[in-house]
Image (cartoon, rainbow, N blue to C red; front, side, top):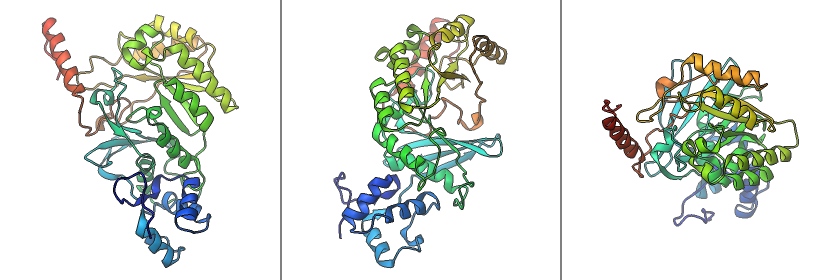
Length: 387
């Protein structure tokens, strides 16, 4: 029998790992001539028990297992490296084909919460000036199997899930490498698997998509799924944000905030937006920035996540002092905002926010350009270049 992936130029087996429940139901009914309930059965084997072989599925008949082996597979990303920080943060470097690598990071918070930071692209094309991943250029989008496969790898590292309370991954944030809304459908499909009780059974409030502000895709997202939303703002005005987050030149701040309000309205509950604000010394961390930010967000239900900048070579930015970060937080508190400071985790294994770069090949020579710019600036100022 044949049921190979029609989107491929070669007769590759269909990777079931990235299929949503409706897609699996269609596969079993249309392509295999089986009952629809097999879809939920297979999903639980893959995502609850971390099965990667049909032979492990002992409640399937031998005939069905042979049919599946003939044309389908369960293929998660290959783990190239697993590193554990002194603070318990775990980072995986994952191979996703053709020499491409991405990173996923699991952050433990207390005894019962583990947040997995998931990548959606190999590299990133948005070129935010303070992000290490952005300086490595863009290679390609990830497939749904490669995105959800990161959750699978983290889950498997703790062993099979035996009951609903045994959740090694309690929260997922689409905040890793790449801009999820630039890889729209695969990201949405992966999140649907995260939410599905046959998949990872996560609450829509425990799955968060972070975007730099692609307004049309954000409007579409509100029609397709209602996960939690975070926006990478990092500046209180267009002039500064144009420098830090170049996509702002196409979709300015007010357009982004209006799209956020529309998204919240579609959610239909008392949700709020998480505003991500990376603090860089002397760039966006002064009192006037805090007051401008407070005025800007006045009409948006939100909390402001303050992220002290995590250094990396040739960035040109510095982390503010602890006292300055706390002053910035205090200014926002005085304006009535919740503004938690994100604790830097996994910095000793380059797993902190903004540091994800892995082994991505710099096909655009972006990192080399930044290093050259740094050397030129240092020469003009008669300073030693940074290493």
